Image 1: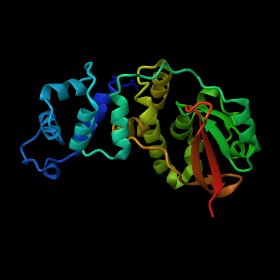
Image 2: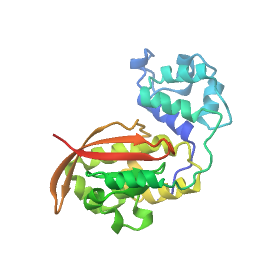
Image 3: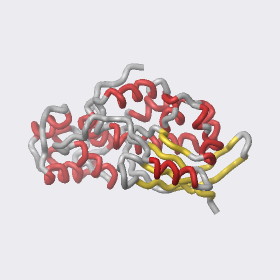
Image 4: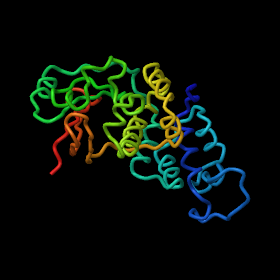
Length: 256
């Protein structure tokens, strides 16, 4: 499936105004051809010019002030993660081009020494290091390099879908929403574009990607249905590395 044209800021703003109903914003119920609010209504609610808002949605070069960004966030009724994402998308300074991360030897040794499943991911959610317990659970060492990616595992590998069982959709959508916050900052980068092209082979991914959900990574519980180890329930947490904030250590501890 062809990858859609990249305009992360415009896509995000459009997806959020289309989710709002005029009634919940105190606006009159007019006859509408498309769902949600009109651009001019969002601009009026935010107290900014219509042309300025249209420029933002169309991806034309603009650098809105912090006050304007917060006004738009309020007009669109954005939550905590959505507000943070909007701020990141409208920043003037963009991240440097993506380069594959390297796990410091000290972090790799620490991961290897952990008793329970542990692994390290990068910005694209590539799995860069893991311990024996994680390998028994997820079989990372038996995968080709291009498949050793959390999203590729979730959406393109039937064995992973079976591993999560009935909880697969919830976990897949959680991972996708966490990835979206990073992807949109690297949308034009070839490394992210090639991964996105692959992932659109999954009908679920293609459908959920259009929703433009974003989420801040949080701790939780995962249940695995392993063909040899049986049903396993883990509490998962993640931590950024001091050596490289792009690296995230994921720990799975048996749930009590």
